[in-house]
Image (cartoon, rainbow, N blue to C red; front, side, top):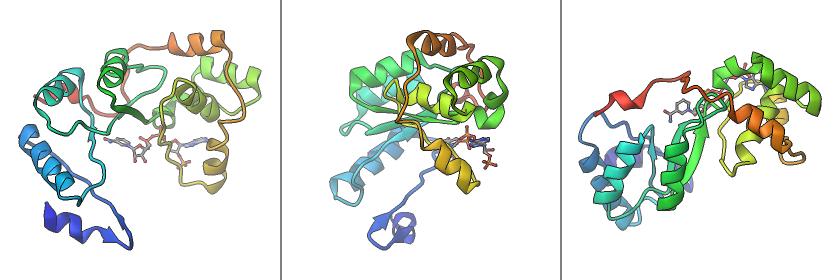
Length: 180
Ligand SMILES: NC(=O)c1ccc[n+]([C@@H]2O[C@H](COP(=O)([O-])OP(=O)(O)OC[C@H]3O[C@@H](n4cnc5c(N)ncnc54)[C@H](OP(=O)(O)O)[C@@H]3O)[C@@H](O)[C@H]2O)c1
């Protein structure tokens, strides 16, 4: 792991990606050790379910700074959000646009039309308005700029509720509950 981390050092920034295939607790202990040595400033987890989070919080010395999971109106993750709040862990969204597939949802389109915003902006605003940081991906420079314009408007409470009511547990990525 140390070699892997030093291999990814780039200028004054240090990036690392840890893929855990087994032994979650031991992997976290290794990250805690590197954190204790000052080699990692912050450590976090991704694709943890409520069960994974509860187990981690019972055994960890250093709590995760962040939990990154799939989050959008069709997958609102209320239990995970409330656990993150309780444990002081930043809940961070990925696939906020449903990998692009939510951009044609009729409810999203209607809210976008009424608020004179793009469907992507509506989806991203829905998350940030709840205090959830987002990681939208686009390879298109114009879309990247437009996607960032979500801090100069607010969705009404009824629109927020309409979007949240789309929750049906649908995933566009994989399901981490299949991991023991
Ligand atoms: N931790 C994990 O396990 C995990 C898993 C999945 C993803 N992620 C992270 O989350 C980031 C985003 O997630 P994601 O890529 O799954 O999905 P996403 O951000 O929900 O959707 C990305 C797709 O939406 C399109 N798009 C973006 N903005 C658009 C716009 N304004 N109008 C129309 N289409 C638009 C993109 O196409 P164009 O490129 O053509 O704009 C791309 O196909 C990834 O980059 C990745 O770093 C993490």
